[in-house]
Image (cartoon, rainbow, N blue to C red; front, side, top):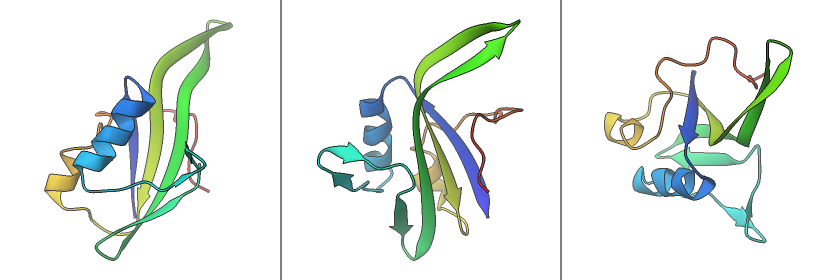
Length: 100
């Protein structure tokens, strides 16, 4: 099991990154549904579609307006797929959302 934390400037950029990686995200009435399960050559991918995040820093809310997503992979993705995804490196020390 591998978890990846992703950040792109916009939701459209995130969708494009997934498309470039060969991962098509299903839409329902034009919306991507948080919790979507994808398949990459038989490997299960769980998608957390998050958007902008707000953290409290020094008792003040601070918003990162970039678009965020989490990806849990039940196995290993090929390097050429990973290379297309906007993976945060290093990953956040305290992610806003984690997998249960």
